[in-house]
Image (cartoon, rainbow, N blue to C red; front, side):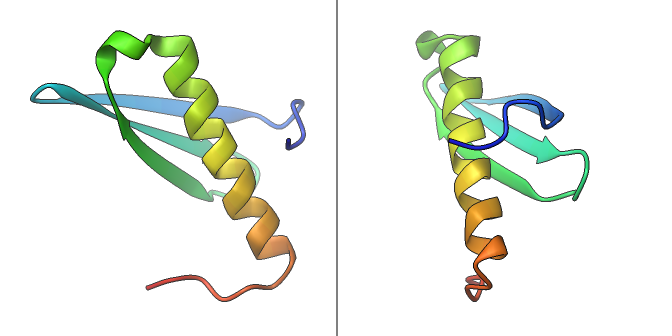
Length: 68
């Protein structure tokens, strides 16, 4: 997993029966978004969004091309 000391801001937006969670790395401005079930709970949704953010940051660090 990524650097747990890295500061991340989370945004939760309810969309119908789902919730959109965006995780933003404050140092780079890189963000990752997931859509999940609100019943999963805040902690789990944050963890999933953070995992995706860590994936995106690692991919960028390796210099891999980003999808459009």
